[in-house]
Image (cartoon, rainbow, N blue to C red; front, side, top):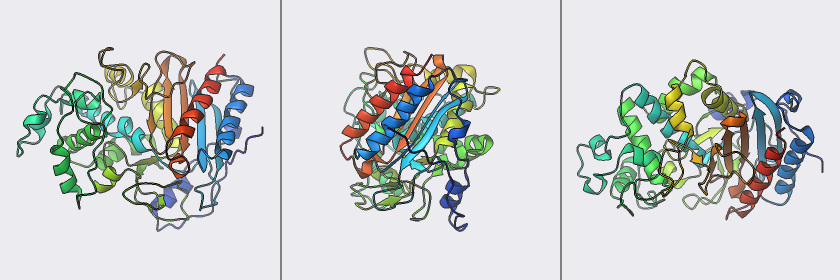
Length: 392
């Protein structure tokens, strides 16, 4: 089956719209730049991996997708297929911006926390109540930042913070009242609430919003021009739509899909980041796989960021990423034991295998057409197995 690769930029954007300008002005990842042989990967297997994405799109797994594989810093595969949504026929391309959903967690709150640790601004052993001195929080007395960053705080996975609240402040009050489900450190429970709380603490310590901190410290220095927290609502923007959010049951364009992040004005540690292939590749290669001069993390900080940091009888999570053995890691069947990664509810995923210097990115808007996520789980398994089989 042939694969439709769309590597063109859209027409000149309306300069009055920030997100559209960023999306269309960003670098387009071109198939012509792919050098699978130089990356030590089989071109025929990578073509089949791309065909899997096309096939899954036609089967209704998502309206549009963009994908990229690199190894050792060499681009091995890149492509896009489909359209921006079922109602927006503009073709998706490799510059299309996607709602990263929970991939926000390692790329914002976790990274910011580690940067602040390295600068002596906080310690992950500090307790949560220390950062809210005006409040009485006995139920959080044993919860540390280390618990939050590794999903071992005892907080539940998710609680609706938007239906009965009207603003960010009310949502934060509701969050701080949520009782624990388990003793801190006793078990692993992937918790959006924990990362919302971690992000809020990072903002208190840094004195600025996560958006301002990351723009200054990471995105701007690395030239990540298409990465930001969302704010657009323009049908002509090169931003993939999302849909089926209970808080807003209509098509969303450049506005965060996650209801809790939306109530927090779109800037949160759990969700809200928007990005595209080129920027995520830059982030993963320059920060994670080939850091230059220890920026933005030192060697030891990066080690904690990319390796399992909790007891094996509790779970498998680094200071930011799912590790092998964690059922949330979409590593399929063949990737090496040091593989880490993250997924996003909207249909995004990032995988890294440091021992192979391998990066795999898949961006989709599956929430438009695959509400229960069954099709995207199948897509990820098929795609990641095909990419793994291409390694030589």
